[in-house]
Length: 129
Image 1 (cartoon, rainbow, N blue to C red):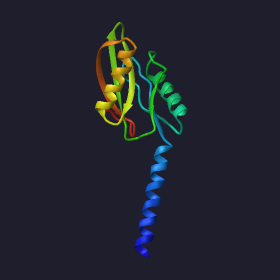
Image 2: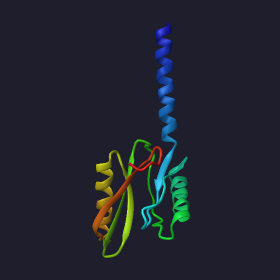
Image 3: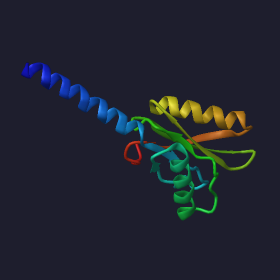
Image 4: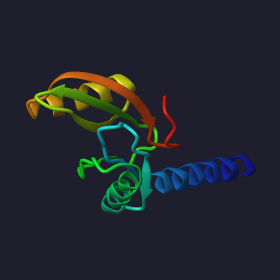
């Protein structure tokens, strides 16, 4: 009986932790200096709003189109291109490679070229990777 209770308690705790993680969104708004931090909120719109505010504290070149995710295990790829002019974007992905592929596609589809990955940021803690 104790074993069953312990297993049930562990399952409830794990489910509660998963639900808590789902309620946290991370977002980054790109700027030309590639200096924007990760911002968090309890909803996608709140995280995006906070990302724009965070960007505006460090730059006057914010894109005002943040990338966002509700998976704290995701990674943001920060990429900038120089053709036809300087432009930067951010996209989240399950891995650094997936995030880089997604942000490159976004920029290429928008007509940008000569792109370079600046860095990756953790959606969970905001640290550069």
